[in-house]
Image (cartoon, rainbow over all chains, first blue to last red; front, side, top):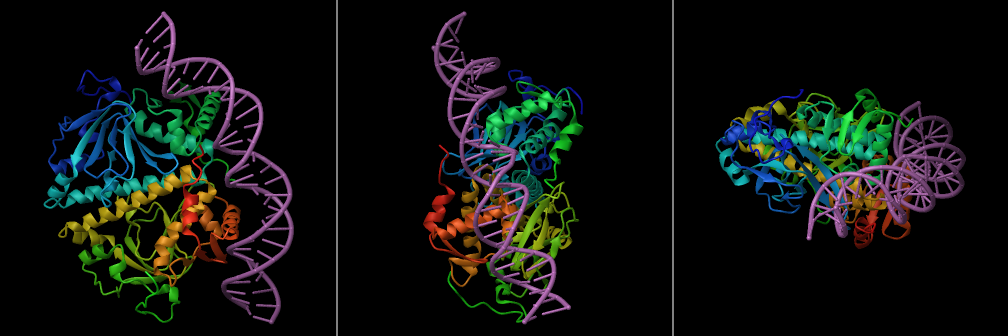
Length: 245
Length: 245
DNA sequence: TCGTGATCTTGATCTAGGTCAATAAATATT
DNA sequence: AATATTTATTGACCTAGATCAAGATCACGA
């Protein structure tokens, strides 16, 4: 929960890039079935730096990814240069699996910061799954989790107002990244205000204003991209506030 | 594509309730693996009438459903009586699968009209999957399709304006239901204006107004709940119109 | 058939949040 | 260090769509 030492791997990378152990990863059991070693030093990890893409929307489905450290955004683009960021992803989270049926990725994935990523070849998966039935069971698990997450985002986009969206977003972030940070209520945003806006369906300026408001009210402390949550109670209250009665 | 005769099953039910054949169902291959007969007269189908619920949000995961006829809405509820309809579902579509990991449904499902629904016991699935590995592969397929659909809805809710949303919605509906209707560009809405609004993140009144506008412009013909698309070109153009440049 | 409640429609307002614009910080580049 | 570029902030304004209100129409049960 609190600060704890993590095995260093590549001294050239910033502290934030220290990867999680396989045991902490959501694809843990999946990789184990694949026969990948789970000692925490997976050999097929690659480094992506800010802006580098793991895959593009429409690309042929060739790898399933697992994030070991850092963060990645996934986005869907449509006509008219409009882009929706469908999710931010952190260490331990799987990526790309939803391309399974169509055999092409429905969204693009791009690193938000220097990130360590495991790549699993889908052909390898198919091959091994023939003899290891539970391989697919793990994929069903990961995908069903994803659908329920997406439904929560749909709920947020369809029903919540700006401040509620942002409060919900911050709480979600703190749950996902603060546990790995040095101080559990404090963490660093790896994405810009514009990217937060594009994820929550709001303008960049609105994100700024509401963050400023939360800061001024003492609910959070905001310094550049560092957020500290001072009053989780109040933040939670904002999420499910006015019933619009 | 056009009108075609369908095997009648239960003469007491309205015409709209004539079920599809298993061969036309998205869960086709899944059921076949389960050893369910694929002659089109699955015995475990049940009838749900308007307003009856297949499952509630939070219910324990006990069945996977396949819609044979009619239509169902799925919805997520949060605090403050706000409800988001996450999807409308029609004949051939699977339902409930996303509860797999959490072992409870993340949304509620309720029939919009008299509907025939196949229920598959999840214990049976687990049991059989032990000896039939590809069982799970089918589930992966269905779930991955679902994730990509949800991502499209997220894109719509996050980036599109009211008229674009509705145009997109109508096109989607026509693709999914008109193929089974007597006239491919004409179909009946099984959901209320309010429900469409709750799905698209808009007020009931806005749905009315925009439908009226589309009708007046000749793009569609609207009579109560019957929609005929007169100008698919124009409708498509609306979806990806102003780049908000 | 009539009545009752749900659904739909349309108009009149109001407002949350988008858009535009003008700095200010921070970062990257030379 | 100096300049350029990206990112963040803040104010002024405006508009798409929500909300409120009042009927109209429909579906359905007695």
